[in-house]
Length: 112
Image (cartoon, rainbow, N blue to C red; front, top):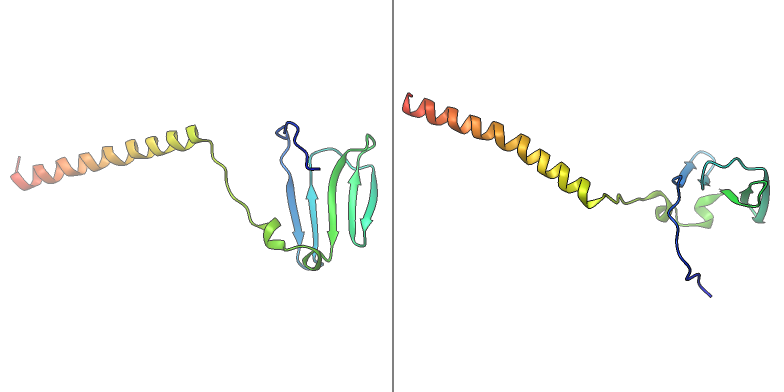
């Protein structure tokens, strides 16, 4: 049965590391230091903390076990307020010099 409880946002971001020379993928799930390792399948290791929490997942021969495109591609989620503020600031910076240049051309055109 799928989990239907509340979802908490993580304080620390998950980090993904891939070494293409050895085809190893590591998912670091937080800043907690691992204390032990559990092999759950051949070449798939789960790093655990002393409290039994999962700190990371190591996948050897990763390209043969998962589609790396699903892990190594990403999307950016931007807060709407930040995007609006940035867009507004850019418009203000861009339109002011454009207006000044427009006035300068009018002045040159009419010799005033």
